[in-house]
Amino acid sequence: MQLLKQTIESIGELNSEVMKQTRYRVDHLVKPPGSLGRMEDLAVHLAGITNNPFPEADQKVIIVMSADHGVYAEGVAPNDQIITAIQTPNFVRGVTGVCAFAKQARADVVVVDVGVAVDLDAPGVINRKIRYGTDNMAKGPAMSRDEAIQALEIGIEITSEQIRQGKNLIGTGEMGISNTTASAAILSVLGAFDPSEVVGIGAGLSIDRLSHKADVIRRAIACNRPNPKDGIDVLAKVGGFEIGGMAGTMLAAAAHRVPVVVDGFISTAAALIAVALAPKVKNFLIPSHSSAEKGAAKATALLGLKSMFDMDLRLGEGSGAALAFNFVEAATYMVREMVTLEEAGITL
Ligand SMILES: O=C(O)c1ccc[n+]([C@@H]2O[C@H](COP(=O)([O-])O)[C@@H](O)[C@H]2O)c1
Ligand SMILES: Cc1cc2nc[nH]c2cc1C
Image 1 (spheres, rainbow, N blue to C red):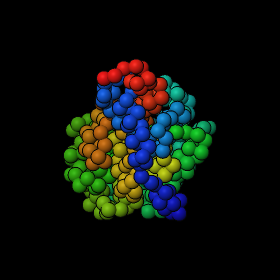
Image 2 (tube, protein in one colour):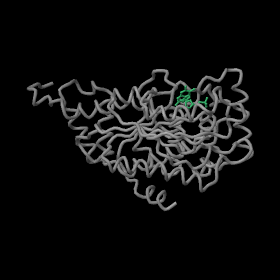
Image 3 (cartoon, helix red, strand yellow):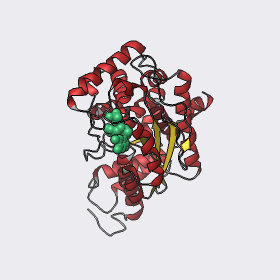
């Protein structure tokens, strides 16, 4: 609890002075004013996060948190739970979707087992297993309050270590069969939505099972009565270990003034938890894509963010965050590589 508390307390504000300096430069670069659109805002945002008028984002990492979910037993997911365990070492082997995009973006992929349902004999996977998957939220809390704090603190520790090693751009990723159910439950509670408004097909559930998935979430909320004013309570009752880990990543990145790119639906649910715990975290989040998962647009809107791009992605893993790294790094190149109108001898 001490680490969580300290981390939350050290989250500051965006540096408006530095943002003004970068805005001035961006406004005077060799282009018609405003012509680089939201890339200009992104550069200014990065300056405010990093306290640096010429921000850098060249040391990148996607932190993938893997865990299983007791609610799988309710038949809410189309795939076998074992896929979490099979896929987790694949992130270390470099052969998954996020790995392809991370390789292209020259980003590391760090993989953490926070609660996969079986033991993984997988060199390279960081073993921070809390236990073998959460409990079934349709029957009781997914985890205890202490375990929720543990998940958050694991995310903080792993992320702080990456920052200590020099990373200046972080993306959130996850793997966990059934985690779209936990994410939709979090969104239902924090956004006061009926589950039917926010459940989607996840990794390929048939449409005729969606009302069942919504019913399971309705039952989970009814039996656990999570308190929407208490992010730890929501995480404990209807969340997941990997969701807590990702929320911890966001808290640590914000505390260290490192930009953190939010991937898809599950990452956005984790962001909602992080912001519930520390509203100032929001200023340090960089959205990436709008996931095709049904509740994603509502989750992003509830966060008050606007996605950068829409490619109909719904893979998760951090894949959309890795793609977004290209935009983020390009914004830093824009500030450093372009000359000003004056330097180019142009008067508009
Ligand atoms: O990030 C997203 O937007 C996203 C949307 C749908 C599915 N997923 C991935 O699919 C898995 C969860 O799907 P499900 O149907 O088992 O809940 C999990 O491993 C996620 O990484 C991810
Ligand atoms: C194959 C597969 C890969 C995934 N990656 C994230 N969620 C996933 C779900 C499945 C089924």
